[in-house]
Image 1 (cartoon, rainbow, N blue to C red):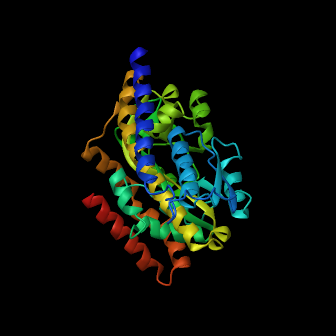
Image 2 (image 1 turned 30 degrees about the vertical axis):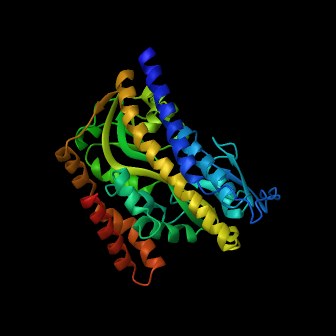
Image 3 (image 1 turned 120 degrees about the vertical axis):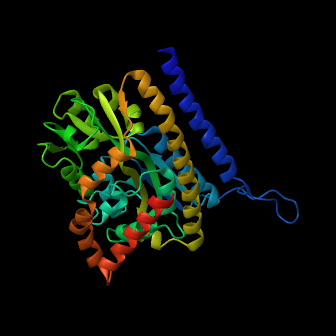
Length: 370
């Protein structure tokens, strides 16, 4: 127990150190200088904008990054924007929070682009595309990142402006029946899935012929469903295995990496469009630092958590490239893109198929080179 506690403390200290370094670099140049006569700057005026920002999930490090973002927005706007951050579902469930941002009742939130809320949202995390933090960083670059480009259009349709990406790492598959080392290992199980249709179709194809049954259950209820035996298996992440205690109700975990979790911090679009350009620039700049902090801390935590989980007794399987290739081939993702993504592209762009092919080609390039 002492060793496990020590390791968890080390993760917390690493997160604090990472935040301190980023804060110090982010705030360089933010302190107002004396005027030409050497007098100190005037006391800041009251903010022009008071906003609320929400996260519906209980995720410690993501919350830290969002609080960093709020603090930096205040700094970069010289106090003209004040953001109060409400973590851990304090302002409601995810869907309640999403609709509140659409209506302008909450200004900013961490959003999961489920397709029942956001028609093109599956593009954020289509399986068997992005699989590492390095690949994601290229795909979401604000200058020419293919996912930043297309997800900005996705959010435009529902009245939100995309600000920055917050990653949680690669998805694996946990089970209480047997280790998942081959698609046939899904046989006879009941698996929890979400409303993310790209993931659902992927799992359906990978498990075809095994009799795997799928149960759509909210993320917040995954622990209870596994504990009570309502489901036998579920996809999860290194962070969720620890922070949401999934390791307590799972026996086996396969580091399949068939998908990559990244949610999106977004602001009410009407509010955004009415902001002065210097305020918009300050918000985007704050998002860059918060995103960098989130990438770095979750990359480090993933490595540390694997050691902790091994000590806790979770049986972890690391598939070989050959084993992963079998799952990927079974997934038949080309069919999934045609079914789920092409209709959205055709509705959105003059030549939808050409745009989809452009996205696929760039994602393949990233996968092969990063």
